[in-house]
Figure (tube, rainbow, N blue to C red):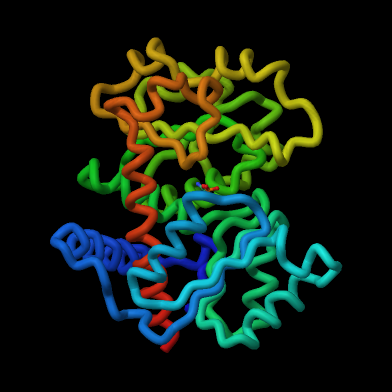
Length: 304
Ligand code: CP
């Protein structure tokens, strides 16, 4: 496997290998080992054509911890603003001897198109509303730190399913690992092709969606991808779908609360619940670092 573009590429043994790598790096890091040699002499280029805090920083830091040279390329200050097409930008980057290209782009399919044209390993760090495979891996890894096994878990994903690449990748990975997946949101934010998503059921009633679940994941409302109105006001959305104390009281005692971030505070979750006792949001962020180290190692080892 040269590239990681979609969860579709991953067999169960691949997922186990990435989790094993991440677990090993996390244990060693917490035992005081803070530099690893696995990517020494390699270069990681990070062209990001959309904003990011978690994904870009953790892929960069993961590369540095593995001793790679890392270079950020911001879409807004790249020569694409002068009319250069994406593939020319990527070919230019590769001519400077990249080993890994970690790309985020607003166009679905961008990472796939790039991967076909270059020899470097390409990692999809989010393409439009299509996929975000490393997020799904870190979400599943975080869940597994708190639950004995994935098989049979009941997971609800609540919010802007229509525009969410996280939802698409999460659903694919969670189903592959044997979970039962429910999606919930306003009908306007449930895709018309919902049958093709391979979920177990969908509902527009958030109380029904979350009450018997082992894990509830709230998604960001992606205002930047919305060219029309999908609900009346953010306040109305929050009242109908946001996590509040009353809804926490409906959850199973050991239910996990997650959000990929960034959070619109007071919309998807009441502000005081973001880092509350039940929230795994910062565990997701921390695990993102080790999962991304695990992905680099996995691609190096499985394409040589
Ligand atoms: N979850 C996620 O992709 O966050 P960033 O946009 O900050 O990378």
